[in-house]
Image 1 (cartoon, rainbow, N blue to C red):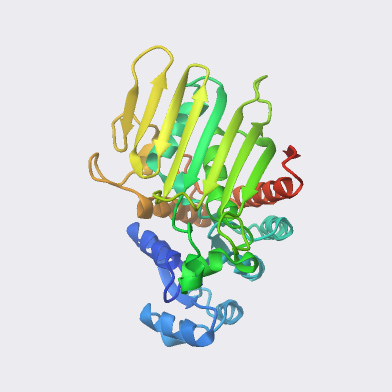
Image 2 (image 1 turned 90 degrees about the vertical axis):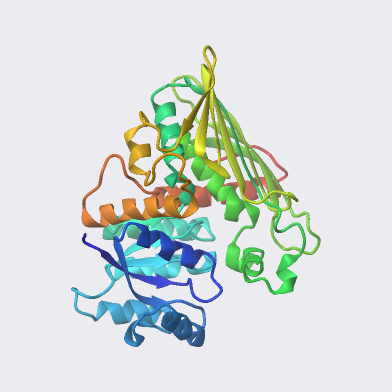
Length: 379
């Protein structure tokens, strides 16, 4: 198998998501980790690179040094793709620099912290023609692919309403004051951009569009900070109006909260059409429920015979052997790898720069709407 050589920015010691990305890439054996600038300080970056088993001459103090150093290497050995897993405020500049230097990019979500930066990144993607993937990993689950196919095929009829929730409870107190690294940067407006809206609301928005194909027309957002002294949102409730499709205008409700005590990683979506509905829950990701207006309720299992090509392509194990978070990430990386190699498959895809920009626009418009008193705001 032709492996893609990649360098990672961020993802060093004490990082949660960097290790997840690297593990996911190993599942299909299609990527080779060749270099990195793994931390915000040169000392930590070098120590993290050593721990990761990188050769000393491929451990860089800064992302600028990595892009410059790799650009000078023989094309047969230099990195081909940059994977960015830093806090959100360190997404835009390395992504732009990497593409201008000739490298493809895989970037963690959300794309960046401002709509202006998102549009700058998109401009460079178009100018350079580089592959750009955004790791909205929940769209990599097999039964999410099945739900998307069923909606597109009209199994539940035209969509009328979408209810999507992403509830967590881990930030119900000022965890950031304890020195917990993830809480520290995710509640810092300078590094995160937005709080619950950016961290998990962006997932809910992308999952909605990925499954339904519906485009947002306008939103009405109530954005709140419940924990005293926290300088960023930790709860959001957003009414959704979708653009007209065939004479029908679907409506929706999106909830993103990190102060719901008792909830862990509770992402769930319900899609109601004229003749049926679909329900998927991230904490029970290997089942999809289909309720028909006339007929029995049916539960699909990951790995079932008869699932669509996209769901089958995203499945690695037989039914009854749980697949979840790592495998969904691996499916995103499989799509990005095929795109880099020019071997795209109709059954295998990945979130693109367009998905990233839509996510940042949604966050920006929700915050704008809430700041303006909650009046309906065009997206």
